[in-house]
Each structure stands twice: as C-alpha cells, then as structure tokens.
View 1 (cartoon, rainbow, N blue to C red):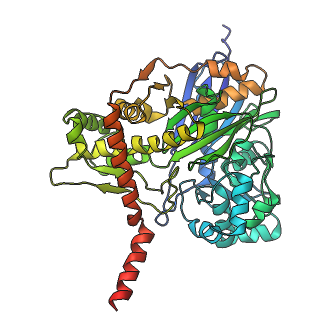
View 2 (cartoon, rainbow, N blue to C red):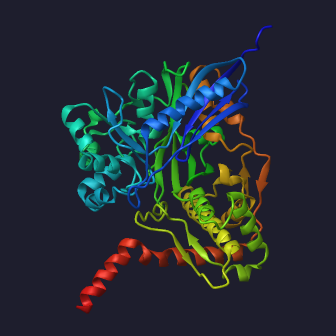
View 3 (cartoon, rainbow, N blue to C red):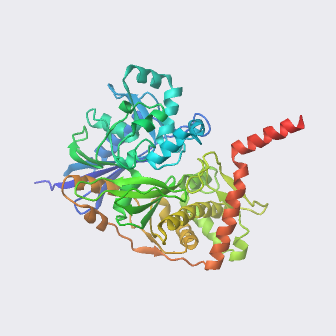
Length: 513
C-alpha cells in the first residue's frame, strides 16, 4: 500500500524559553510540532546565559521529531528564526563555543555603554545604526566578551574567532560551516548601518570588534538555499519578531503587532525606506525578499512579560499562568474604577526598562502594598504593569506615526483575556487577537516557502486569521487618569534604580562622616 506523501515546511523558532519546530503544509496549516525547553543560568545577578551546544541539539532534535511524527512527511525546506540580540563566541574552524550564549536580556555590558555615552564615538554609533546606546543590543556584549573571556581574546588574537548573533552559530553548525546572518538580525546588533544593510567597520571598531570576526550579511530569504544536515535546505533566516510580523500580515505602513512572549515586542511597519524614529523607539530592518520591496520597522520592547507572570507562579502565588489570569480577573471584577485606582502598581523591569524610557539598570518595583493586599491584587498588578508598559510603547508609536496604529496581538499571553481587555482599555482601541500564537514559526516557515518559489509575501500575509477582537470598555476620562497615575509611578521609580540607591547611600554615608 502506497504511503501518502505530505510536503512540509519547517519553521524553527529558537527563542529564549524554548526551541520549537512547527511543520506546515503547503496551505500553511500546522501539522506537527516539537519543543524543547531552554535552560537559562544566572552566574551573577543580571547575567543570563544558555549552553550553545544544547541549543543546536534542540534544533536538530525538534526538526527530526516533528518530521518523524507525520507519516509520509517530505521535508521540503527549513526557515530559522532566532532570538535577535543574543550572542555567542565560537571557534570558526571547529564550530565549538568559546563561551555560553549571552542573552538579549543580559545586563553585564552596562559598563561598555556607560564609557561611550556622551562621547563622539557614541554619537557616531547612534547615527550610523539608528539605535541609541544600550546593553540590550549585541555589540556591547561582544565588546564585554572580548575584554573579559580569555578564550575569546585568545581566539581573536590567533584569527580563529567567530562572534555574532546565535543564528550565525546555528547555521555554521547545521549548514556545513556557512557563516551568515541577515539584515533583520544584523539590525539588532548595533553594528549594522541602517542605510546600506552591512556591518559598519567604524562602528565595529568603536566596540573593539574586528569586522572579519562577524558573519557575512545575506538576504532574509536566501538567493541560494544552504544545504543542511537536517535533510532539507535552509531557505530563510530572520530575527524572531520580524518573522512574526510577516506571519501576522503586518506588511503595510502603520500596521502594528504586539507579540507577548518572554518579553513583549511591538513592531510597526514603516515602509520601504529606513526610519530613525524619535519618541524612544528603535529602528529595525524587517526583511529582504527577492522580488519584494525592502521593509523597515520601528520597535519598542517590554523586556519582562511572561517572565513576570512565571515569577508569580515560581513564588507559589499561583499554580499556572492561567490561574494568574483568573486571580487578576477576580480582582478587577471586585472593584469599581475608583477603588481600582488604589490597587498596587508593578513595574515589570527585571531586566531594565526599554522603550520609551530606556533605563538599563531598573529593577522590578511594587508600590501601594497593604496588609489587605492578596495574591489576586498582585496578579492584577502584574498583568496591569505589562499592559501599561505596552501602552507606553503604543503611545510612542502613535506619536511617531502621527496617527493611531492598527493593533494585532499574538504570543502565549495573548490568550489571557484579562490582560488583553486591560490592553485594549489602556490603548483605547480594538485589538485583533491572532487565532494562532506560534507566528514566529509560521512566519519563518512561510519565508522558506517563498525562498523555494512556492509562495509570495501577500500569500503569507493572507494566512493570518483574527476571529476575535477585544474592544475597549474604559471611559476615556478614566483611561487618562489611570495613565497619568502610571506615569507618576514610573517617574517616581527612577530613584529606586539600584545604582541610584547605592549612590544615594554612599552620599549619605559620606555626609554623616
């Protein structure tokens, strides 16, 4: 009896919390999935690391497991989505890591940025890359590794060092030594010229990076596919948020997506020309697809989203993320608006505050706790803090565009009805919720199919479905009052950033003596 052959496209989403491979058929339906959780270690406070070899193994395992789960599956092509700003150093000849992967959320490179702040070199970096100095981007962590990891410094000296974003490492290991990245990922490094989409030699020199150590820049959808050890060619590579943009149909200027994962990242399509935004937003490149116009975007990141919810669970205050939503819903339902204005506030800033405030050293802050505060109140405060921070970014996007952005949401937390209602209320507009949450995988698989000539960008965008829209219910006057209270809170927390507290303590001690 003949076995039915199902042609499938693999979308590999190598994210912060897990590696996931989804298989999609020619119509874009997900037919299989496999997942491995990632282990993040914290050698010191503010340090976030992962084992590079374990990440490569997870990619191999999930691809093979997913394909094996579909009888008669024929793997036609692969797309790879990566974490963006996370980096790793490895031996160019052997492919073996010289360090752990240092994640995008890691804050150890703050001193590198501080030394450049306010200098002519720092201004040059910002002008060329379109990004304001911050340890969030890859360049500062590369500089830190070159200065502080002896194995990295030794490899730099003998010419065997490769250092870059994680995609370049994965491709080197999976595609027979190829060493490439794409502009959507390169734009997250703070080493790429926004205008010519190449790593800039002068910018790299500012960070002490020899441009020869970096991967070659190629199109997001490769002009020529790369053979791999996984049984099918690699057709596309992109930063995770930009792959999700494509899958969510954010292909026209002004369209905006909000992806609620470990953090929440808000990306707005701004068209076919580079844009250096104000309002605390970052510029990013979206994709290069043969036969399609170039696409740029602007982005703002809320660095702690699911991380904050998972933290409540880890503390034992809830059994699951779903229960956090239930508790928050009960707290919201039990209070009218005036009483809710007395609920605790939470700044979700375990790894600093991103756009539009950009406070790299900020830590999480609760305010307004009482003896009567219970886990329902804390759950509401955490979800409210996430929604408020996302609204900070949406307000900045609106100011940049001069009009209200059209909002689409995806990611695991977009299934939390309490959070999404709060988000719509604070933004004051409808939010279309994607029917499917794994849009990074769907996007990069679709880009792979585009690379094989089986799909185009319009066809990929048309696959996005939104059968549920959350409408705002909060009166504009109440929304304005809540946002004003939030702004007062955020501004007040500046004095509580750990370095400021320490400086104030030193000053007080000196005055006392």
